[in-house]
Image 1: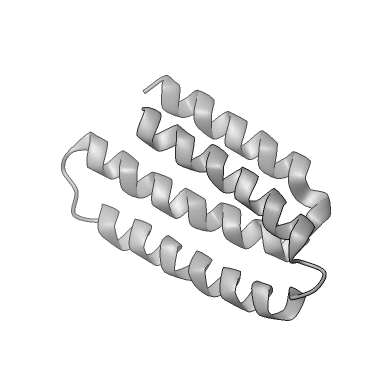
Image 2: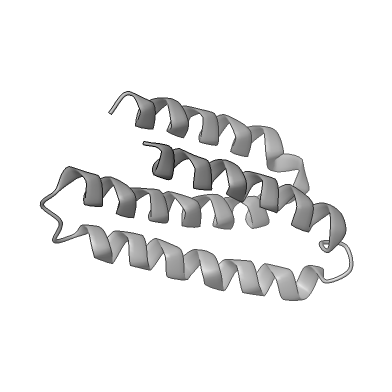
Length: 99
């Protein structure tokens, strides 16, 4: 479960650093880049999980698509949304530890 939860935490920290340093300067380009990357990760996670029979692989693809959801939500709602993202990541970690 370590490999499913740690990338979510590091993704949240990366959001904070990108937003604090680059968001105000390169806002237009970052939004386009992050939305394209979030769409790609959602598609890869969803399409990769369709034909999986092993639970660990299915859960790994679920983590990939959840990272895409976090990416898209963070840039649709902006910097003020950190508490909601942190709550989502904490719930995701708790649910993944119970698996």
